[in-house]
Image (cartoon, rainbow, N blue to C red):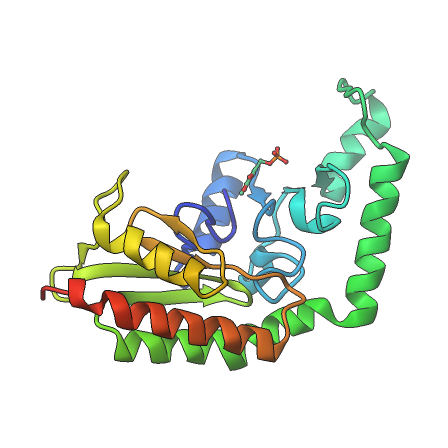
Amino acid sequence: MESVVGTAGVLIPPPGYMEGVRALCDKNGIMFIADEVMAGFGRTGKWFAFQHFNVTPDLITFAKGSNSGYVPVGGVIISDPIAATFNERVFPGGLTYSGHPLAAASIVASIDAMKEEGIVENAAHIGEDILGPGLRDLAERHPVIGEARGLGVFWALDLVSNRETREPLAPYGGTSPAMAELGAEIKKRGALPFMNFNRLHVVPPCTITDAEAQEGLAILDEAFAVIDKHYTG
Ligand SMILES: Cc1ncc(COP(=O)(O)O)c(C=O)c1O
């Protein structure tokens, strides 16, 4: 499972959920694989998103953030007990480019730079001090924002035409004139939105500065002012 689900809506597990999954896995002999491809390497304001919870996965999959995409790479971190299995027998797997030295070096260099430059701390700060308060403020002032949720530099806004019924501003699997207008208004002002059905994702780089995040929030504020007219609730 993704520790914080990404493309499907930046869904943060409620208190106790991850711990419950871990307990079920332990009880039934199931591997707990944390997919940290999107949430890992700083995005949620911790090195790994599962670290927001009281769990230890058996395997952690990673890719994108591990080297900021400088060269294509992905990998799996294997817990000690599972790794020990392969002290006794050969790991029966092979990939054309496994352990590619250039890709591996790009991860080491990226981790070094992230530590030296405090990138994970920056992502946490941006979430706590700029994006979190800023997006919640937008949600208070723009009725179409039904919910703002996220951690670090990993946020999504659920857009609704009615806050009470939570009627989505675009149907599941589709779009709507309101969503298309929102995207156009954001682009017009120089930002590139990621939208999925009735959601706007706010997922800037972990290196974003306070001023850039504030600039982004100001663009969203103006764009939402244009589409508030689509609120019918
Ligand atoms: C959460 C998540 N898991 C897995 C993948 C697939 O990663 P890869 O293409 O490195 O196998 C992606 C790719 O977008 C992803 O976002």
